[in-house]
Image (tube, rainbow, N blue to C red; front, side):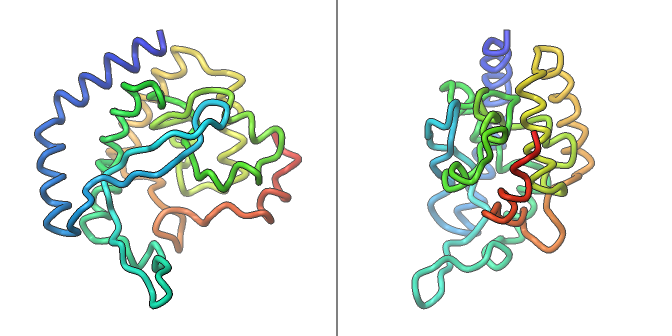
Length: 204
């Protein structure tokens, strides 16, 4: 039922929002140039990597050493608008159709975080990652990493078809209210670190 729901809703969203997809693509090209899509390797089910798609919200500006500037510096006003209404997430429905993502599940984070997880935290990868999840409707980027992983692992132990429907409904409400988009002082959220991994290692 979960996979069937993923396929039906993804086809519905991509069909209904195809005009918006085109308009956003054109506006990104005018505002930031190419590429239009942001592609990054992320850990999927059991930590297996896949390529995640999102609309690009940041410039490619670098310093004199070729390193990207901070997220706060590179995030454009149009990119901020896309994030505020979660429009940057629309291309991820392609990932859902191909089976790499589910509509609901722990968000796929960065590959470099994999060695930092405690044994309990790594259990968030025992289910397919999702566009939205239990952590997203309970604080999103406004909560700590430890709280986020606790919620992710709780979902792994408790997920069901009806819980997924509840999370999807709450996600719509959160998007409308524009809650939890970023952590105070950051464009999105403070990067996960070894110190936070050690601090949260004993929690499940």
